[in-house]
Image 1 (tube, rainbow, N blue to C red):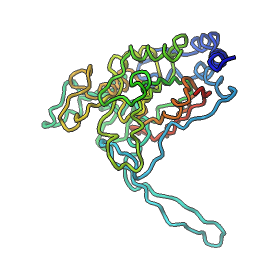
Image 2: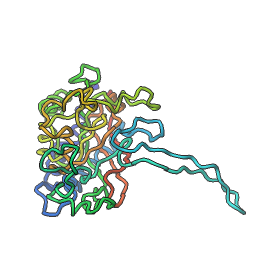
Image 3: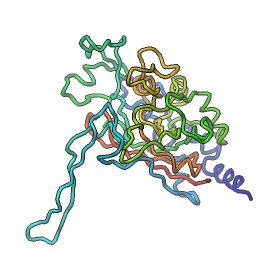
Image 4: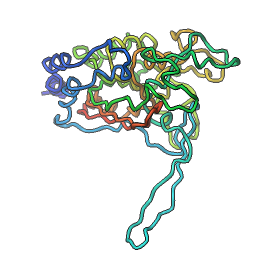
Length: 352
C-alpha cells in the first residue's frame, strides 16, 4: 500500500461515517437557553469525546505542543501589560535537607500575553463608535447573551461577574488544522491584512482531503498562516505584534454556523491587521464593518459565543500534516478572569 492509501485507511478508521453520525446525535446544538454563559462550549461532551478518543490509541500517534513558552523576552501585546517574572534565590529549610526554587510574577496580564484564551466576557460593544474624547459610555456596553455592563462588570474594580474564563469548561474535542500558508501563500507566510474567507476554508478542506468530514459541531479549528514563524524570543525586531493576517468577517459567520467551540490562528489577534493600522496609516482589514477594526473578536465573543486562542504554535503540526487530531485545552480557573494563559496540546498521526 502507498503512504496516501495508508493514510486514507487510517483516517477512515479514526473518524468513520458511523462515528461521525453517532457523535452528531450526541452533540447539543444551539440555540442555548437564556442566561447561558458557555456559548458553543455547550457542544462539548460525550459526542466530541467519542470522536476524540479514537486518536489517543491510534498507531503512530504523537502529541504536539501548540503554545509558546512564557518568558520576559517574548513578543508582548500592546493591549496588555507585559509579563515580568522575578526569580527567587534558592532557599533551604531549617532542620531539613530540602532546597527549593520559585519565581514571582511581579507584573503583567497573564490572560492577555503569550498563548492565551479569551473569555466570552473579554469583549463587549457599545451602540455606536466612541470618539475617544468624550467619556466612554460604560453603562451602555452589551455582551454575549444579552448581558449588560451591570451584569458583567458592575464596578471598575470588579472581576467579571458573568462570562469570565472560569465559565469555560475543559475543551476536549476533535480539531481540524487548515494550512493557509501552503494553500493561500504558496508556502510563504500570509501577508499583513490578508483575510482568510469562508470560501478559502472550504477550499482548504477540499485540498487537504477533508471535504467528506468537514467541520463538525464542537470542533476546534486551527489555521496555520505562517505568521507564527515571526514569533521570536527574544523579540529583538518587534514585528510580530504590529500587524498580521487573520480571519475574514464572512468566515467568522460561517464558523458560527458550523458551531465550532474555538478558533485559533498562529497570529496575535485572530483579526487581520494591516501594516501601519495601529499608527493610523492604514484602515481596518478588507470586509470588516465600520467601527469594528477587531470584527472577529466582536463576532466570535459577543455574538457567536466562540472562544479564541491567540498565538497558537502550529508550525510542527502543519509540517507533519496532522490535519485532524484530538485536542485538549485547559484554561486556568481564574474567578472572573477576562482570559487565561493556556497550554493547548493535540494528539494525532503525522503524515508528513
